[in-house]
Length: 343
View 1 (cartoon, rainbow, N blue to C red):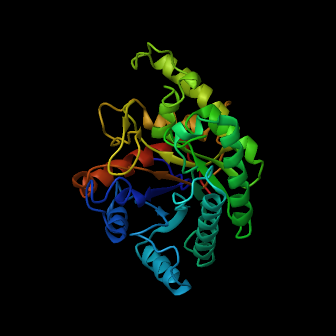
View 2 (view 1 turned 120 degrees about the vertical axis):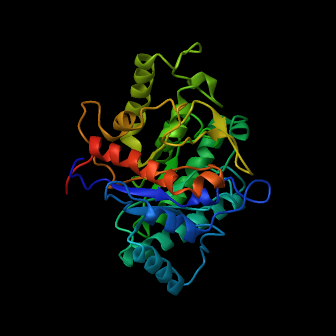
């Protein structure tokens, strides 16, 4: 085991909410997610922190400053820090009406303020505010140029309000978000925003689906007859993808995927998050994480000081087992051992 202490290892709390609800499984409380994260341990190594979603029922985005301090105290009391936060922007599509786009920007403003308060309290030494377009690929495809322009205008306004609080925005690449459903549409959108405080949030599960062209077949990278046993072609495809998106990447999720899409509850189908030990996983987690964490010459980029595991839409039975979090932590440690640094 190396003596690397960066990047910090975080677990996400929002999988306790995403894909849950009345038409799926009960929400797992924030306290349970925090306590499960804090309890995980592998050979004396523990998670350093959590990334959190700023939405009900875990978080009241409009809570008082005293409430934010209580949250900070709760997290730090468990020996954890807070990193990236997720803005609840789904009530106003970024390519929607003027009123809907204003709602989107207002949610980013509230989230950036919340995030800055956590930073001031010392519990959040790093991290960004995560967003997406809150728009469906099918609706975006009705007018790609016009809708990309609208999304970019909304994102620009969101960047400007985030900058007031010293925050940057990370747009998550996921096949279920219009204007972000492929690697090429993602780059087009980011380039159109033209702001210094926006970047890309890469999730190893979601970006794997970019290779297959889900929701944007013309941007497929792997051949139609691709065989997952052909690791040379897989690696070449991932290098094409990561070389294009790595310069934009300011936030990173370690994850596994079995090459399929999945959705539960009200969540649209997207790249299936698999357990770190899933035998059907198509990624060599530690090896392929290096495609994102190192540049084309193999040098560490050190673009972000923490990495996070995202396990959205795991069954509650799986998420309440201590072994689940220990296995995930073990995978994260392998990533840091291979691509970390001492600071």
